[in-house]
Structure formats: structure tokens, C-alpha cells
Amino acid sequence: MAYYLGIVQNIGIHTLLGLSAYLLLLTGQLSLAQVGFFAIGAYTSGILTVIFGLSIFPALFAGALTAGVFAFLVGIPVLYVRGLMLVVATIAFSEIVRLFFFNLNWRAMVNGVEVGPDSTQGFREIRYFAANGWEQIEVVSLIWFFVGAVLALLWWLDRVRAGAVLRAVGEDELAAQSSGINLTRVKVAAMTGGGIIAGIGGGLYAHSTTYVDHNTFTILLATFAVSYPILGGLSSVFGTLIAVIVIQGVMIEGMRFLGDFRNILFGLLIILAMNFRPNGLLDGNTVAALKRRLFFLKAKR
Amino acid sequence: MGFDHIDVLQSVIDGILFGSTYAVLGLGFTIIFGAMHKLNLAYAASAIAGAYVGIGVATLLPVSPYIVFIIGPVASGLLGLILYTCCFRLMPDGNQLAPLMASIGALFFIDEIIIHQTAGSPISFPALFEDSFFEIGEFGIRGDLVFVMLASLVLMALLLLLLFKSKLGLATRAVSQQVVAAQLCGIQTHKTNATTFIMAGVLGGFAGCLAAAAVGVLSPLLTIPLTVKGLIVTVIGGLGSIPGAIIAGFMVGAFENLFLLLRGVNERDIFVFLLLFVFLVFRPNGIFGKTIDRD
Image 1 (spheres, rainbow over the protein chains, first blue to last red):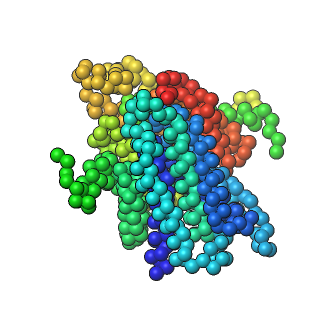
Image 2: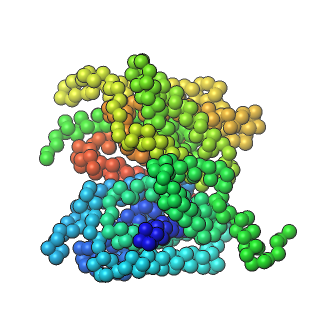
Image 3: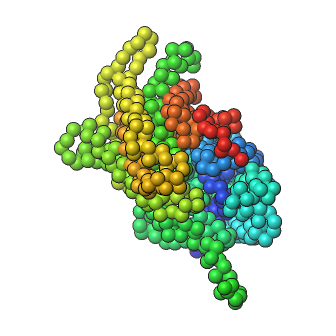
């Protein structure tokens, strides 16, 4: 049972990562900085509960806020410049964050034990849940509460003007600009939102695994984060969820017998998927067809 | 610790010499970007993979280990063609995300195959003139780094000759300026783009071999840093600018080695990557970039 709960927990955290990339992808921007925000959220909230003895909710809030602030600050110079520069800058940002935590040494004595991030040794003993008697099922519920909330929020976003603005920028920047949309402002807003979501995910990740180190927060994880919404398709938030379940649940967990061939498979899967379904699994036409089937609507001819 | 100006100058000189490999890699990224206005993120990985293939052939066959410098670039050129076919050729024109994502997939595909084949451990690379060392006044200069520099300069000169003096180069530049007009003049865009990828691949293969020879080992840990530094060189030089990429390559090399001296190996790359942000804030279009790219 604990094993299956572990998978569900993992899927929840990766969904948060994927959704944080999804928000920015709606504006047509591919960012590999999500893993940087994820790491900032993880370390900030971990340090707050471990060294400062804060409770989990204010710590998660502070982690999300810090990640959001960094997303905002990085977003301004990076999103001001159009196009592919963003990919380069966000890779560099994620590597800066990773190397910063690789060098971070902040040890403190709490209750007679030395705790805190220990540079290359990683950050151990993030034991808030165990110390406060949380059952694993409660931890999983907490994670999925946040996943559900973010999913609902993004689903709702598509039904209001803000979502239309995001998609307008993603579809055609020139057209969006001519109808009076400030491109940089919209993109920075999406980046900040994505940063907050990734920060929450990072905080939950640090506390549910009790241990983080710089090796977790590599460009590979950033690639996972953007590959979920891209493989799943950007027409619906559920595309991201389905892609996480397929990749993390079926490919990574279900094919354990393949060993390290799974990582090779991941790269190959992305190449193949992009060639055969460049707009993702749930692209616009598929979503429309599914809606017709599910709600017995008549097809438009 | 105190550093005098000799230490600082010495490390800057070494950095500039090693930076020539970054310049070559940045040049490869730049000509691919110039031709298609798309980034090939698997480019540095294909350069490293070429060097690995070269090493593999050199260990399996009873030949001189220096054959690496022929096999490596050829393998990288072939990989460039494969990458073009798999990640760029069949993608819809307007879709920017799909080819980018596919090339990231290819980056990890190549990287993981290398890790799988070598079990992740580094392989020693044939060193160039190990014991040659020049002393000029108070400075010492490593002979192999001088060779790396000279070889890079020759490569860059050859590429520029090819781009600006041959019919092939004319076609490449035509496609990069105006695809439709080039097509109307009877240039086959796909063929030209494929040639560009092969040229960039051969160039990258040499750069990969030179970098590995200067470092002394070949390791999958080289892929991501070389990718990021090659990209930074491209951006700092101005996307699509050839002289920019060359100058930025030397600059990044010098900067990197300077911070290796000042801050140590663990913090060095932080400062190199921060340099990119300094440029993004104060000079977003790079050293030689055109200013029309702004919103």
C-alpha cells in the first residue's frame, strides 16, 4: 500500500511541476526555469520548518512566495526579449539555482542536533510530517488538495478573460499586441504564477521525501516539467495530468524491469511524439471531439 | 589568499585559449540558428557523442589514437544530419515548440545512451603534446592549449571561407535571409538546411575533440555545461551573429577561468551564467545583435 501511495504522491508533485510549465506555455513561452523555482520552494520551506520551527502551511506559503518573487524578477529581463532567448536564459537560471544550493551550507543547532543544508551532502532531516504524526495518506491528501486546487484554478482561468488573453499571446503575438495587450506584462504574470505553483510543489516535495539535494534539480527534471504539458497538449489542463500519469506511472514505475533504458526511452518518446503529434495528445481537434462524445453535442459541419 | 596581476593575467590567457572551443561551438549554434531561426539544443551533445564514437573506434581498431580527430567530426556531422531529419525536417513550419522540444529529447537521448554505454564513468582522451610548455617572461603557456586555439582559428577561417566564398555558402545565406525568395531562386531549402546541420556538426565534432583533449577526459558530465556555455556564447554574441559568437567565445572562456581562480571550481559556473543575465539586462541583443528583435 505504501508503495502505491508513494506513486500517487510522486504523480501529484510532478503534476504541479507540469502545471507550472503549462501556465507559461499558454503564452507560447518554453521555460526550463520551473525546476529552479521548484528548488527555491523546496529549500525555502524546508529551511523554515527545520531551522526556524515553522508549521507546514506558513512554510509552504513562504516557499511559494519566494519562488514567485524570483520568477517575477527573472521574468522581466528574460521575457522582454522575444523568442528563443528565453530557453537559454531559463536553462542558465536553473543551473545557477542548482549550483547555489550545491554550495549552500547553513547548519544550525536545533534541539541538540545539527540540521540544515550541508552543501554537497544535501539537505536531510526535513521531518516535519513524521515529527508531527502525519500518516502517509494524510500527506498524499494534502498534495492532491493542492493539485486539485491548481487544476480547478487553471480550468477556471480558461473560462474568463485572463485565460483568453494568455492564449491570444500564445497564438499570435502580433495580433495580441495590436488588440492592446501588453505582451511582456502578460508573460511575466504567467511566469510569476508558474513560479508560485512550482514553489508549492517544491515545498511539498521536500517535506514528503524528507531529503533534497542539488542532484534532483537538474535540467532533466526541467525537461520533464515542460514535456508533460507539451506531450499532453495545451488545449486542456487534463492533458498535463494524463501525460504525468502515463510518464511517471506507466513509463517510470511500470517499466522498472527496463532499468536505465527508461531514461533513453524518455528522450525517444519526446522525439517521436513531437513528430507524430506536434500539438500534443489532447490537441484542439481531439478535445472538441471528446466534448461532443461526452456531452452528446451535435458535430458542427 | 592573495592574487597578483600575474596570476590573474595568466588565468585570463589560459581562459582565452580554451575559450576558442566555446567560440567554435557557439559558431555552430549560430549558423544553425541563422539558417532556420530554430535552436538545436542537442548540438553540443552531438559534438560530445562524436568524440565518443572517435574514441570507441580508436580503442577497437589497431590505429593511432589521433584518428579520433578524423572520426569524431565525421560522426558528429552524420549525427547532425540525423538530428535534422528527426527533429526539424518534418515539423510544421509555424510550430516553434515542437522542434525545440524534440531537440531537447534528442539531447537526453544521446546523453543517456552515452551514460548507458560507459556506465557514466569518464574515459581518458589522448592528450596533445603533453610536455610542451612555453615560457614568455613571467607567463607559462600550455602547448596543447595553443594548438587548440590555432586549430579553432583554422576551423573558423575554413567555415567563413565556405560561407562567404562558395556556392553552397551563398545558398545557406540566402535561405537564412529569406526562405521564400531563396526557394523562388531554385534553392532546395531542406537540402541546404541539411548541409548546414552537417557543417555545424563537423565543426562541433572538432570542438568536442579539442575540448576533451584539453581537459584530458571525456565524460557525460561535459554535455550540459558545454550546451549551456555554447548557448550563452550564442546569446552574448547576438543570436545569429558570426563575429559576435567568436568574440563571445573567447570572452566566456576568459571569464570562466578568471572566476575559477577567484572563486573556485564549485562556484565558477554560477558567475559565468550570471554574465548572461548581465547581458540580458544591459544589452539584450548581444554584442552584435540587431535591435529589431525587441517587443
